[in-house]
View 1 (cartoon, rainbow, N blue to C red):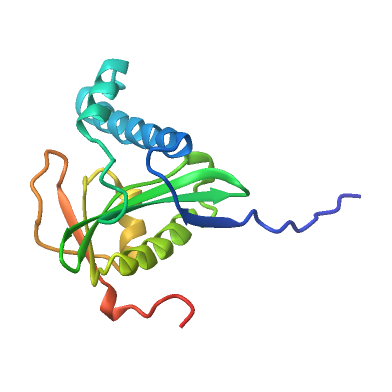
View 2: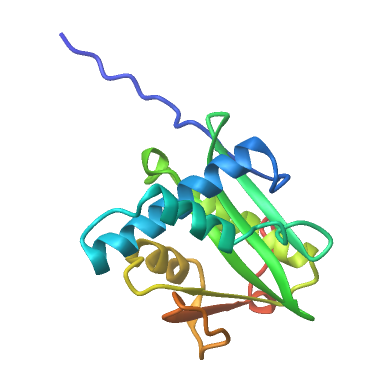
Amino acid sequence: MEFITAQTPAPWTVTPADVGSAEALALLREYYTDVANRYYRLHLGRDGTAEEIESGLADSPSDDLAGPTGAFLLGRHGGAPQACAGLRVIEAGTVELTRVFVRHEARGTGGGRHLLAAVDEAARALGAERIVLDTRLDLVEARALYTRHGYREIPAYSSGPYAQIWYGKDLTEQAPQGS
């Protein structure tokens, strides 16, 4: 006879973190490797080389994702670091969301939902009324996550080499969590 035991899913917690910590740097490296390799596979039919990954990381520093004009959030699932997101103030009342990542093994467990709820609160703490972001068209999972959580396509606000679509979210239309 087989018994099925219902197990409570491991809880997610999302807290501010030092963007220079070992856990943050490991997640940022994994994030960058993931998105870079997706780009290289799509456009060049191969993964990026170690040199290309290192060069890209050096060209995309994350040190501005710290107070007082930024924030870095670390998501833990069952206590282990599994997700991250960064915010930077780009003008009064507006922050940019960047470096959103959930490790592959933790996807489908609610991490994106928890991460974006914490992003909204962190953005408000930075004085933001609006969150914007840019992304690539091939990052379909990320784009679906954003639209499920209130982000809408907006006109271009940046011109980076990988910015192909832009999203925004008005925080004044959203009730804070717990309201």
